[in-house]
Image (tube, rainbow, N blue to C red; front, side):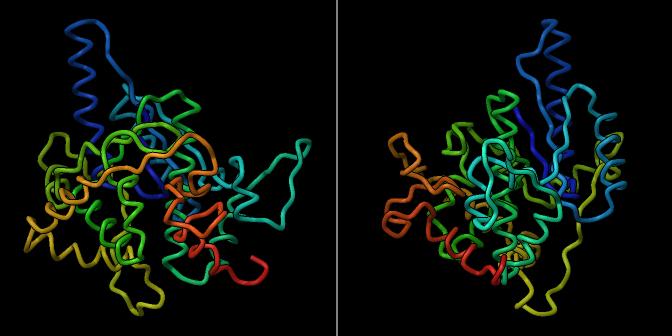
Length: 302
């Protein structure tokens, strides 16, 4: 199994999810002398924040949960995955003798050249998923476990709907098989609200509060510089306090959506987000409408 974490952030849900997994593995080992699975925890650095703080936190997590395997990769590695240079940086050419090489500055330039905060957030998320799937396949993982809480899944549901991308939700929020490289995805924290997860971190002994590195939500000064995803996060921070049942209902409803199936072949899916192209893309396009919208906002020369 692969347990991913992204950017220079380690949310409460990540630490909370690792604890019962550790307890389960220890119980299996004590009863039968062996375990039925193992977790590979991937920490993805996006170049933001103080690297030393993030590195120290990862070491603390390793010390707390030594049963798991850990690795770290920069998000810029996603740009070197097959086909990514051609899609995202068409002006750069590569050959078999000169394979694609990328640096954090390449990623920063690519994101900066996008003209809206929402497009930058969307591309960041897409590259993260691509990198996680590639890592899961590299380590022959049988599934990817996401630590998204009910609140996080509700935020993504309304954000994608507001962008006109509701057709991508089954691949981003549903348990089970997905088109993401053939690796199933599961959301073990999907029935817990964010406030419940935060409460748990202080109730266990020793507490998990020292294993959390999370950016505090900032009030929007201007909606022009705020992504739709961030606006939804601010919205649900108040909704889950007053109306938690609404948050849960959003996720339960989305969970009933089915992943569209397509015959094997590259032509049937978007090359960036892997959703079915039929009905969601221009004729003979390699990208869906959503990914086209993300990339068409690039500034000249980007």
